[in-house]
Structure formats: C-alpha cells, structure tokens
Length: 75
Image (cartoon, rainbow, N blue to C red):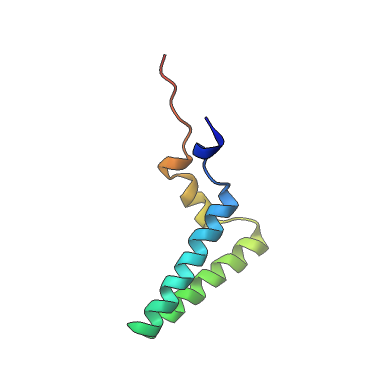
C-alpha cells in the first residue's frame, strides 16, 4: 500500500468531521433555523467529553467505516 492510499490518522479524521459538522450547523443556524446552533454546541460538548474522558464516540464510528477496515488479501 502506498502512502497515497493510506487512510488518514483517526485523530485527523475526527478533527475534519467535527469541524465540518460545526461549520454545517453554524451555516444552517444562520440561514435556515436558529436552533441548528444548538447542534454545533453539542459537537463542542462531545469534543470536551472526549478530551476529559479519553474516549471518542466519533472515532469509534469512523473506525467502522469501510476506508478504515484492513484490506482482504486473496491468494
């Protein structure tokens, strides 16, 4: 497997997904419905909990995604 096809580190994946969710919810809160701001806050609360408890539900979910599964080698 070359470096180009190697999956990103889990921490990097979590940061990208969390940042994307916050951006999405802030945009939706600004343009659609103000209560989407609460969802952005929940992402922040999840990140705080992950830091304090040293467990991350988002990393658990991302770890089950197909791109994070080992490739099956056929003989």
